[in-house]
Length: 325
Image: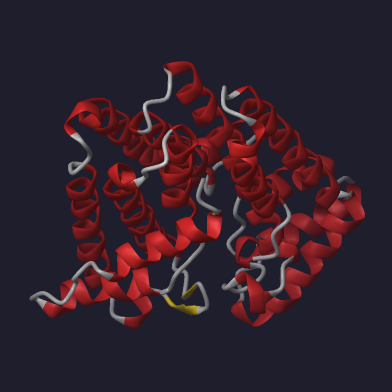
């Protein structure tokens, strides 16, 4: 069994070998820029780790893993345009470093490149892998649309939000694991258990991300703290704050939600964070995160390989759950 660090080194080496020095330079240079930022490489790592549960040779799953990582970064690139985000992983986003048109076109090429890598999957697995990847790509777009719709909706509920992040974030983790399991010749039952593990850990992962956006350290988180607050993003934190705030607290919350003056950005972040603290919102979100984490571990324990082989995935789940970046 390969360790998580060995898997990451393999992925990084493979990514470094991809040649993006093509013409037109302005189209391809941003791809190299985005992929050179690093990131956690969680999705390709999950693909290779799932494959490694069932066979020692993970090389047949490498191209699929690369395709998933390129697709993930494509989705972030377009997401940054839609959110008008200025920083990603501590560096300027593509639309800030270049411009919107470059970011859109570069993202389009990355999506095509993702399919090109996925298409290099060994032929005996290619049909189900392509089908699942296409389904997942569609679901991610559906999740993004729900996220956009929530900006204009006043009645977003917890179950609506959880379904949105399942589509936008969790399905790609499940997809990565299931594809790796298939290429490793896992049974359909084990492949599905790993998919479910990915869904549940993905939900916990996104809830942790929401918490870090409010309570994280900007120097380690890689982007500005309070971004979700400033754009009134319907995270689980805000949804429960809107539900629980009464009287003066409700009036205060609505006042700050209606505030778009950039000169008051720091005050808005501090005020809403203080409201979250008074309403116990952090604890509510942490409890929900632990709920999905527990479900994920239960899925993993049922996979029919020895506990020793599953330890690296268990360690990764813990790392995602308790991370500070």
